[in-house]
Length: 360
Image (cartoon, rainbow, N blue to C red; front, side, top):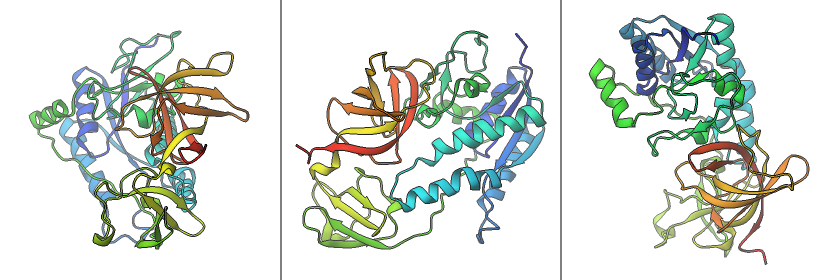
């Protein structure tokens, strides 16, 4: 098995990737820092430019660690493979998780190609909070065994949800240096070595005003600034005083044709009994047996606890998910991620809700 010497580390300008690069260098790897540019703020007419701030911070990190610094421009690829898909999905009222798509197509595909083809890397590292059975630095890797994606030590920061659509090939060449650390430990390391800046990023979607209607009465309650801002089942934070409810208002439906946001408190339409997802390309084990059925755990929100469900394989690459208890917040476009205890098995995009508590 070829020894890993050269590791290309993605440097975002934030603390997690900075500490990842530091830990790699500390273990004796030949580390190259690469900052990805995925968005052109100048072309979009932005008056401020967080991208340039991130790039400066990334370069500062590499200078501090005394490692080479490169910039890889993926603006065209991001626009064509991620952004346009997101815009189309948002316009249709689909709640797409942009990080999942970006990880699959840019950070663990295009970026990997760049690292191996242009920089002759032996492995690639990122600052994601995740682990694998091959070890944080691929020190336990095997040529024949399956790599398994495992939850990070820090359950609050665990990012396996966003990595759930990665393949065996992508994971086998990936290191996650901070996966066995807590966020506080990462921050402390950053303080100890003099790097504490964390950059924030924002998403861009053109606002489209539309009505927010009570799902029970059809009455217009207020105007919203775009259905892309809402996720079915999630609480609406900015509610006008005259619409306040003791239990809160939740997004119950999104209509992309009329730009209508349907809201309610305890309406049965908020709770899904069954929904259909595209079947994942399972990372390791497949929980669906030869009969086309199975049982496992799932999440539709990263911060929610994993819940038990029954699975039934349908035609055309689809999978029916039946939670043991109806769940709030199962929206088309959203990712449904399957787990076996601490292991992430894979994730698939929700296509539609099959039945809710409204249905008999």
